[in-house]
Length: 402
Ligand code: SOE
Image (cartoon, rainbow, N blue to C red; front, side, top):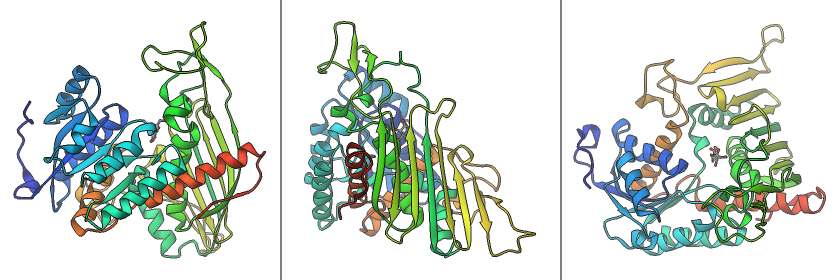
C-alpha cells in the first residue's frame, strides 16, 4: 500500500520522522490527524511520515491504515518496535499495554509518544519514567499525551498565571463531566475493567484535570482527600470486548471493576486549595472540562465546550468597571495560532493533537525533554494512586509521594 500523493509544501527537503502507531480506535484516529496535518501547517525541522499502523486484526488495521493514510501495517507491536525504518512509536492502546510497548520501543532506540494516563499503576509508570530518563542520554525522547495543554486558550492561561496576572493563587476548581455511562444497559467495555484501564473516570478524566490544573497553576499537588463511587456494578457483556474476563455471570453480565466517578479536594504546595470532579454520570454533559483559577489579583476561567475563549477578571480594576471579560483566543500572537486561520475563525478538539505532534517534533530536534515528559506522567500517576488510597480510607488526607 502506498501513501497518497500530496504536494509537500513546507515539508519539502526536511529529513523524515517515521512514525509507527499502535492502536487505531478513537485516540488512534485523533493522533493520525495530528501526524497527517502537522507538517503541512507548521514549519518543522522534520517531515513526519505516517510509516506504519499496528493492530491485532489484520483486516481492520488495513482498513484503518487506508482511511487515515498510513503507508504500511503490522499486526504485532513487537515487530513494529523492531523495524529499523521507524523513528517514533506512538502508543494509542488501552493502559494495560502502555508500559510493555513503551519499554520495548525505548529499548529499541525509538522516540515514544504515549496516551494518558501513562500507565495502569505507579510501579509501571516508575519503570517507564526510568527508561525514558536513560533513553534521553541516548537522544531518544518520550512524551505523555495530555493534549488539553495544547488548546491555545489553556496555553494562554498558563502564560498569564506565569506572568503573575493572578498573583498568589488561592483556588483551583476543576470538573470533567461526561454522561456516556448513564444508561445501565451500556455494555461492559475495556474502560470498565481495572485490568485493562487501571481505573475508571479517575484515570480517564481525572488524569487530564490533574495534569491541566498543575500545568496552569505552575505547581504540584501536595496531597488529596477523595471519594469514589461505582454506581452501576454489573453490566451486559459486549461481544468480543470482554473475552477472558473474570466475574462474568451466566446471565450475560459482568462486573464493573473501576470507579464511575471520583471527587477529590487537594492542597497545592503553595497552600492553594483545589477541587476536582471526574464523572461519566453527569447527564447532559458530553465532554465538559472546566477550570477556574482564583488568585489575589484576579481569576481565569476556561471551558472546553467553548475552547476558543478564555475568561479573565482583573481584580485590580475599579470595582465599578471590573468583571470577567472574554478573550477570543484566535489572534496570531496567541499560542499556536500563527500557523492557522485569520482571527475569529476558531480551532477545535482535533487541533490539540496537531499541536502535540508539533511540540514533540521540536523537542526531538532540540534534544530536549518533551513537556509533559514520562516523569510528569509518573507524577500524575502518583496523584491518582493517592486519590484511590484516600477514597479507600474514607477520604483521609493522603500526601503525594515525590
Ligand atoms: C473518553 O472518556 C475520552 O475519550 C478520554 O479517554 C479522552 O482522553 C478525553 O479527551 C475524552 O474522553
